[in-house]
Picture 1: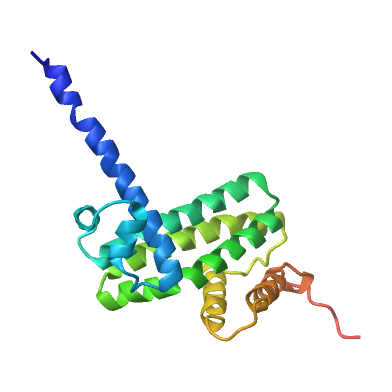
Picture 2: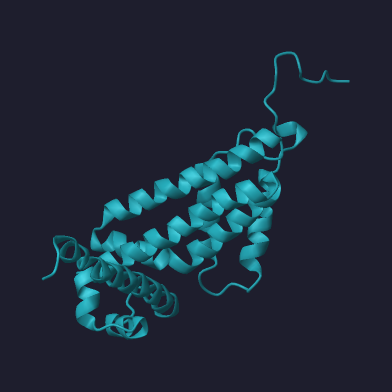
Length: 207
């Protein structure tokens, strides 16, 4: 006769399988959306994940839910990368590498974010934006403290510039143009003597 403990433990393998299926679906959706855009076939996503369409719809009742899950997953990875770089790289290198990762993310996923907003899932888009801004502020604040980034540089402005590069180079740009534009942004973000706050009486006298 099965014990009470064995009956209570039985659902755990099913929960583990469900988590694995969800993770496979999110990864497969990321790959399909990257290749075909937010309108990629859901049946192909299920096939790539090795599950049936019914399993996909049990986890994600509609396309918007799947897109939101993919964006959330990728943004979590992006913010985790920010913290990893803060702990392992110098301030300048961490800022440059993370902004490069943000640019790659924005170029790959800007269509998905637009699809979410069109479909009305405003909450997911807003939450993701704030998470990205918080990560940008952590990386930028370290560079400011080190004295290598402009003290008047705002994290929101910096993110907007990088996203602007992604949008501007989405179609018809040279392969190296996004990186060249990002290099210009990084150069503009670097601290210089004339970007430090002016103290009273510190202005040079005219000769």
